[in-house]
Length: 519
Ligand code: ADP
Ligand code: ZN
Image 1 (cartoon, rainbow, N blue to C red):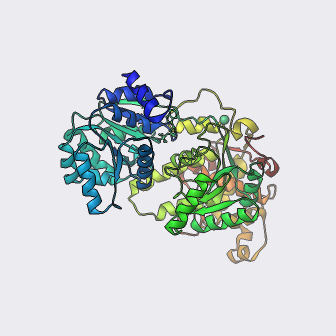
Image 2: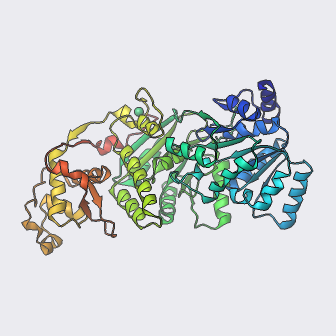
């Protein structure tokens, strides 16, 4: 069986050997078994179903949520001489009929389609009349409500188990913690699936996360040693994407904007240029990336905080697919936290959903404030243990100093409390520093016991401290829209003197701007 698989790998795809778990997965599926495949992006998931599809009789059905991705795959397969088609809504009724006819005649080997299409009763009964080689369910984490991009259509894929009991099914995903994995198995009825879990470590990526201070200057500092490299800079808003792209261009870095607000043709054009030209920087919202397979992306920067570690891992994972050194660099600040928390509070969705999202954001914040190896922390989130610190992240290289912030933290919390739990960080810092200004006077805050007790620290140090308090959940952001801070339940033991607080000491700006992987 393995010989057969290797022959196909060589003859059709032109590769000499399987990678990682590929051979085992292919063997399992070719023999008719189910599989759950967890493999990082770029790990080579496609071959896990494409090879057994060619080894088995009949039509292989591939479910994918992304039309662009399907079209890419189909184009690649056609080039390799494999009869593949994608059924999507852009096809005319005539074209669809023609495809159905070719399928019926057995002229198509691989059929790509969206989940909502597959589960249409007409489609299901059409497929039941055929010989099916396998079902591959790509991006299987979409079935999980705990996952970061739940798609209700995926829930209906569970019925394939009963409708096609003899047909092997594999679910594939690049992101799934333990909980999501269980959900995939349960909802897709994959009880008999063998699980193939690959390591998620991307050893060639250097991780660095620094406090946001002057983001553009920091970004330039990071890019200075990377002139001529291709990279992606992620921003949260369309407006910021445009501004940063303009800024980088004006500084001699060839940059293109990409976001959902651009006309389709322009977006496609920018994407094409990024893929085909060397050394371009794509400044983009998260609309950019799914299915981008450019091996030599040398860096991924975040100027805004991602909403979750899943998102962070996915986005940074677009760097260094060729295995050569690459960087994941991020600047994050209190504003990011406030903004994301507000977005979350104002989002549609029930309480349960919001709690999950909140939990995910907290995990992201914990990585930012992490004092140990970032890679260990990141992998631990995906239930993978890295036995030793990696030696290839900012914390490992620079070391992290912690300091006893118990007393200043109490002072900061006290300033929040005594001023009525509704002021933003700027005003709170003014109170602690004893600044005499109009807003202070109007509120009578010059009379507070905490007024001026924090003169031993600078403005920046206080701001950092407030950010860390929020990141650790000791203070909460008032979600009515003005970003005021309140105390949270969890700060009580600290206020009562029952526990202390150790915080990470921020690197000095000069040190923070230092190049990372090239250093
Ligand atoms: P994923 O879907 O897991 O993100 P892909 O299936 O798109 O990854 O594969 C990523 C890249 O690795 C593709 O360019 C693919 O051709 C290549 N690749 C996969 N498996 C092998 C292999 N065994 N040998 C060489 N190249 C491979
Ligand atoms: Zn490390």
